[in-house]
Length: 117
Image (spheres, rainbow, N blue to C red):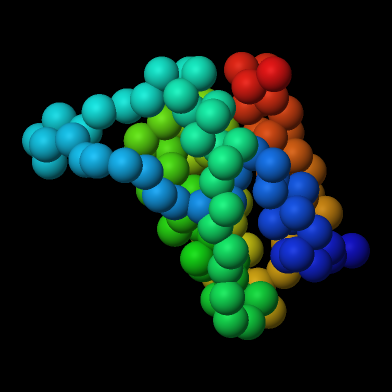
C-alpha cells in the first residue's frame, strides 16, 4: 500500500520542511549549526513543495539534502537518510512512497526527535 506524499510532508512538517537561513559561511568551510540551533531551525522550517507528486518528491529530497549539509551532525545523519528515501521516491513513476519507505522516514524522524525534544 502506498501513502500519499502529502501525508509524509505533514508528518515531517513540524521537524523539516524548508530551506532558509541567515548569512552564509565561507564556501571552503561551511559552518554547521549546534544541535539546539538545528532543532530551532527544523521546527521553524516552512518549505512547501509544488507541482506533481513526483516533482514534490524531488524537491523534498533536494531540500532535505540542503538541510543535512548545514545542521548539526547528530541530526544531519537522519535527515540525509530522509533525503535518500525521497530520492528513491522521486525516481518512481508516480512519486509516491511505499509503506516501507514511509516506515524508514518515520524512523529517521524519531531519531531526530531524540535530539529535538
